Length: 580
Image 1 (cartoon, rainbow, N blue to C red):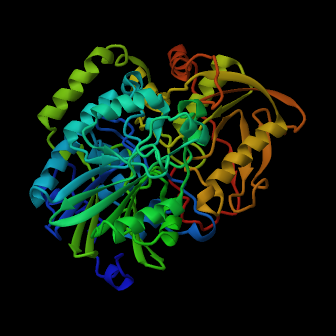
Image 2: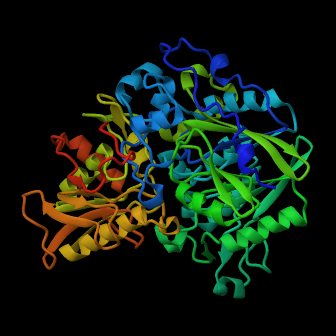
Image 3: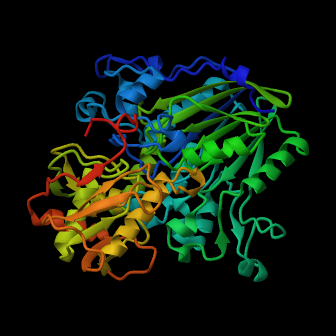
């Protein structure tokens, strides 16, 4: 049965580390020595985006919540985040979880993540509880996000995840390699790929397309049952629900997706009543807001291990539903964090839980030799083309944030300059690493921002009305008060155009005051030359990474102008920080 509200009050979650000590003064023992608790340990990573090496990644200074989500996790940033979770401003945790004084803290605490370092930590935490008492789960976006993964169609990450010991995963960007590459990778993957919410289209079913369960049309195995610590634990996979909408449909023409909470409820009921499991875990790539709503509607799930929106939330959020309480988590991105869910499982129910979201400080963890050797071997044939310096970061270059990021500004500058357009549009992807000011930029760094299977740039003629419609549509995806209408990205980035946004307004009324760089208003009936990339429609232009690299090599003066977004009606919203 789900955890009851009174039981949640007793949960012992060590959300923070001992902070405030000088760099390298702490040891791995002081940070990662966790007291043993319960009889089952679930380790969870998500949204690593193929980052095999340690990274810098700046958390957002703008992550606005609207409606009932305003002021609630995950829509807290900066000081409001620290206050909510009791984290010291000068601590290592403050650096890992927020944008506060990011550059200063980065110099002090170093990079996070890296699969060789993660392997050391995973092995330690699994060894601490003994054989047969742990699982390692991945929430998706494991295979995409670097040039290496793009060239190898995720095969490099299959090898790394096998060595890491991932027992089960679900997916999102994995689907953008297409069915053939996906299935080829899954044949080599030693864990299980779970997705209860992916079904054959009617035409594909009629043509006997491959499916895990032809009778129901389910394409992949929906769940698995593992015996851990003498108890039966069910893990259900929930893939990203909007793959054919957010990405070109040509990658998954035979499959239909969706949240499918009714099918999920039937699956949970069957696991509880027929299979007699003692605990149910949902391994989700819905995004946190969607998971919070789903937890209020579907009963019988003990914990949702969430991903997709890259929210690093140190403590679970308890959601009450007709069957009890479901805990909802989200474990960050880019390999920065490892979630540790310790369960005290009795017969037919979870009695208690302890949850920690541990930053993976690479300087505190010795790289695992076998994983480091695999990484070096896999990178060797490709690294020579990508490691030479092509420019230096003229400022802190980051992406994550609801409206703009300096890295996205650079991409928009490159599109406008190299393709000779008035306006540039760049997708609001949440993946992509951070470069410190003065850091050499290589082709590998450019690919870490742009490596997708549909990178072609385009130049199009659009009217002012069409441009506004695009902005309104993306903004509604971001700020619709019904989470089931959110797809989890950030606002489309703009070059050459400023605007005002009122997130709390209704659809079609959020965008106003559109103004070109020359100060003239965008005219609804006038046509403009617009550049962009990552279109869901097939394009024929040069890959965006070549356009950005050419721009960087040209030595043209960087555009340091502000991103040109004026926010309205957000006064006092703790999802916006003064940190820039």
